[in-house]
Amino acid sequence: MQTQGHVGRVEKNLYWVTDGGYQAAFLTTPDGVVLFDAPPTIGHNLQRAIDEIASANGVPNKVTHLVYSHHHADHIGASSLFGRDVVRVGHEETKRLLLRADDPARPAPDVTFDAKQTLQIGGERIDLAWHGSNHTPDNIYIHLPGHETLMLIDVVIPGWASFAAFNVNVDVPGSIAAPGQALDYPWKHFIGGHLGRLGTRDDLTLHQEYVTDIVENVRTALATVDPMPFYAKYGDNAWAAVKAYLDTASAQAAAPVVKKYTGVLGAADVFINSTVFVILESLRLDLGEGLYLHP
Image (tube, rainbow, N blue to C red):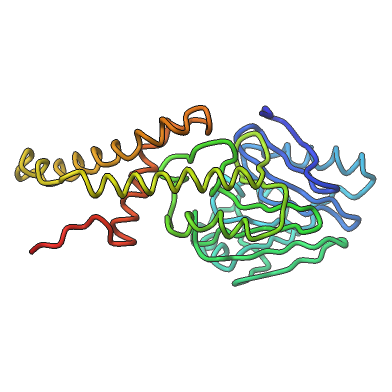
């Protein structure tokens, strides 16, 4: 695993930067640099990395375009470092959310799109697409076909189990579907936005298996954990009864996943309970599974 302060080549003139926790990428061209995300934890090291690579390649080091993957501050909170004359590109929902946030560190995008947008910059092609909400309402797919690379942030963390609450998810069904949509693209390199390495197609397939196992175990728990004893135990304290029931069902669903993926995915046991809980609630509320119909 790479540690903090790493910049490396992805493919040809596409590079990635990581501080060990967050990732960004940039494309050098004869007309300037296209930057993909600007995490504040990397901050000024983004320009330092660009300066180093651009100098070695004999191309301009000026960032002319900054593509936002989504609106979250932890991925684009260093955007303002690149000045006002950078063309910022993002989904139309990203613009709406950033205007609402009114955060000077994250200027709203100048160029927006609804479903698809293709950028032609310095002889390079960048395909942007929105396939519906997943991690956030505005999270997009960034495909660089000439570099065999796909960037999709905060959905799959290569080599690792999901962060808390299924990567702090706003649309669980959308996030479950997203890796399959990502695999529909032709690519070899994957940029997931976090930790210290790039991903592969096998990483996305493994993530799909991990989530499928969670879903199957949640369904088993919903079918086998009886909520009524918890209501009998806690009487009028309804929230205590609900919590005890959901905690028990989540723990039952989590246990076999931890056992199977320990040593396969990093931190398989760390955030599993919150991830299972979010998926359990999605099955109940989004899909209507495990709800009891009063006779």
